[in-house]
Amino acid sequence: MLHKIMHRMTRLFAVVVCCTSTLFLAAGVSLRADPASASDRTEKPGDDAQTRTGLSEILQVGAKILGRHSTPAAATHTLPQVDAKGTSSSSVRKTAIGAMPLDHLSAENRQRVQSLLKSVSFYRRLPKVTFAVEPDVYNYFLAHPDTAVSIWRAMNISKLQMWQTGRYDYEADTGDGSVGTLEVLHLGPEGNLVFCDGMYKSPLFSKSIEAKSLLLLQTSFGRDAEGNVLVTHSADLFVSFPSQTIDVVARIFSPLTVAMTDRTFTEISLFLKMMSSAMVRRPDWVERITERMDGVDDIRKEQVLELSAQVHTSAKKRWLERIERSRASEARNEGLGQVPSASAEKNSASGGGSPVNRESADKPGSTRVVTNDRRPGEAQ
Image (cartoon, rainbow, N blue to C red; front, side, top):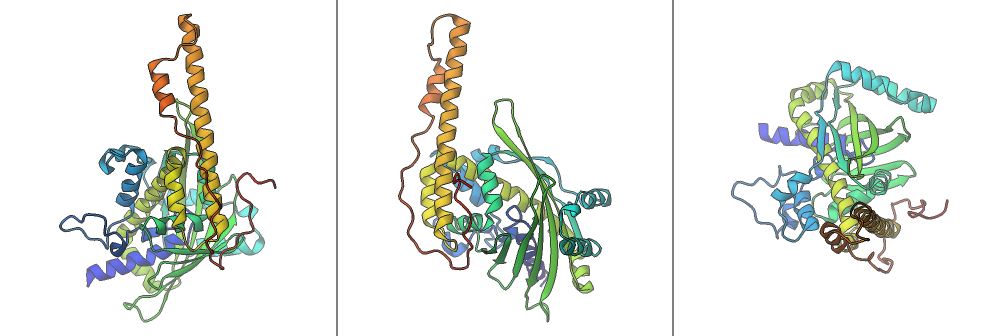
């Protein structure tokens, strides 16, 4: 019975987490493979498919993208770097509340946020994570979480459904009775602020469990010594339960909740890193996975393919420019003319092919998805 209760509470926080952020907490613990659709994987004795998160699944795909002979174990060196562990300290919580962009909200939304902050049942500052990524890829999935969720289903690592119902509004359904609505209250350099109403249904409780949550996502970009773009992001998560009984239960299981939310944030960071690498190095894989996307309109599929082609082309151009600079530098240093070094020739050989040529998808999309926004690179 205890195991069942823990599993149900995990699902409760799944809907809270999955509806809290436009992307980074959009999956909650729904980043789990569907055992029925994963028959091609070999199960080890004692494997519990119900408790497996999406980390191993994403690593499997990442290994294929990095190279035919790569393995998930070898791919672990590409995991996002955790710069600071998550914390629930009162001092950090106070700092997070002070960082809320309340001055940028309407009077109505400011009241909603302040009301939730006065009745917080659970708070967590998620880990500060840094990883290499193409900024356009990061920003696209931040703006279109429904696309990311559709790709998760295409990869068989999630059953989560998400629909765009307005310019800044979404609905989410975990498939087990837990549903939620998500509203983006603010997008800006001060941070992205998202509000969520969740409803959790369970045979363990006579009534549905309501939960309200708020997430402040803060992001910054930089470069490493080699000039690669790095993103660093973290998020502050506030959850409120109207029922004091549920509040008590949530506090009892807070260690489970803490581990789950921290891991989820890292997993989604890994997904973003993987998609960025795929668009740079394996646009053919992106094209195949896009063909399997569902629950989104055709324009989302077209956007992903166009973004992949743009990212691949830009990356190839940077590689060629880097090789030319290396050759010019060697020529100046050695005075022997522009003779490519062995390393430059190797990089040139592995620089990737031309962007994939494709035809627009013509499969019908979901009628619930709002698709008024423009495609990447289209004039405003």
